[in-house]
Image (cartoon, rainbow, N blue to C red; front, side, top):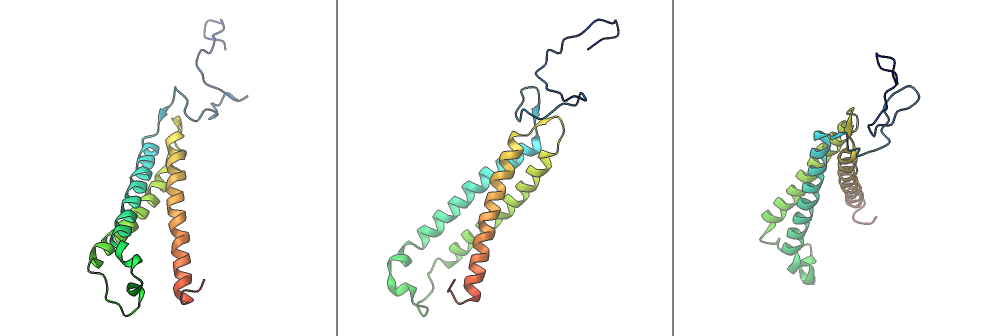
Length: 153
């Protein structure tokens, strides 16, 4: 590259450019790029959602522990468990974490389109959050089909 004095400058940075001089995104986490704040937020949301969903599932499993070992409890005429409110709260918590993951997926996608920012956390946040939303969407559809067919899938 020539500078204003006619001498050639050497590009000492680690940047890569195409034939038109545009910088390429070949390096996802390039050391000269700052990480996207939105991407970091998306990644953190995915981790919080995963931990929260696992905690809700463990709580529900612990509350249903006695029901699963008692065949009489599976009778439709059996009384409802006394901790039904806590089970419902844990189920609602799972719903909230899935909604949070949906927001995190949107943030991750937005982070992917930020210029001059490293995309590592945006990619991770988008993938993790999308997997969470996708898995629960499939489970929801399976439950809906099971309910409409009377439990026979």
